[in-house]
Amino acid sequence: MSLEPFIYSFVARGTMILAEYTEFTGNFPAIATQCLQKLPSSNNKFTYNCDHHTFNFLVEDGYAYCVVAKDSVGKQISIAFLERMKADFKKRYGGGKADTAIAKSLNKEFGPVMKEHMKYIIEHAEEIEKLLKVKAQVSEVKSIMLENIDKAIDRGENLTTLADKTENLRDQAQAYRNQGTKIRRKMWYQNMKIKLVVLGILRSKLCCDIHRMCCFDIERIGRIARSSVSFFISSSV
Image (cartoon, rainbow, N blue to C red; front, side, top):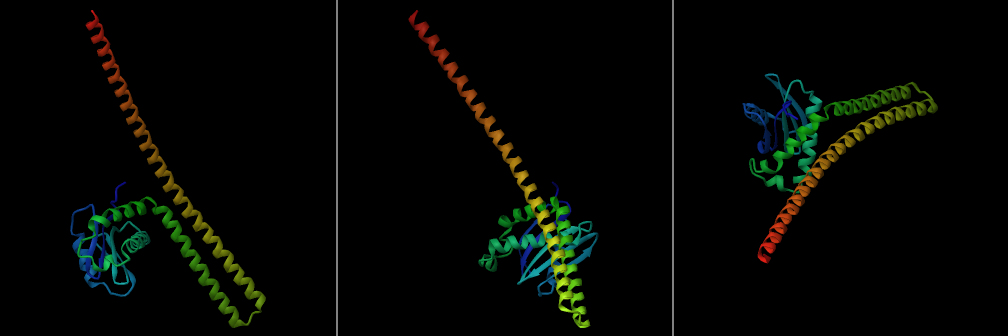
């Protein structure tokens, strides 16, 4: 599948880019680098718009994660990609390797990984949007119910009423969590199905190759046997 919605991505320590990936030519890396120079150092998320594209940044603990996307790609989808890339990067290089890496030195290792994360996010954009929506609903319900409980306390409502409202909050939050779990499980099954199909194709190809090799060997043995018999008969005569 084309990675067209995502144009360019990088991981940087401070203002030094350690790994980057793109399938496109253009001035996107230069613009993204200019944005990087001006980023606040505080942990946060930033999005800049330029020429129908978004430049999305996730800054955390001195590292900046960037993805340039078409403006048709939702901001939350771009941030989901950055979160996924950040988690993988920290898992691979959290032991200190990234702290001493020089500019572009992780391109060969991490560039293909960035490509795979782009592909995953694009292929599962619909499910991810649903999951993000569920999380937002959980947060909204929690905020509203806590606000209602605070107001009830201020009004001096009895403990039974407060307990009922708290129970209602817990039930609604649990319902949204269950919905999110179902979506994540569906995404896992889809990934597993794709892997099984690929495995089946590879296995079929391997069986065909072995079959052709066996047929070739049998045919060659037959020719050798026929030649030997002919030679034996000729010698006997």
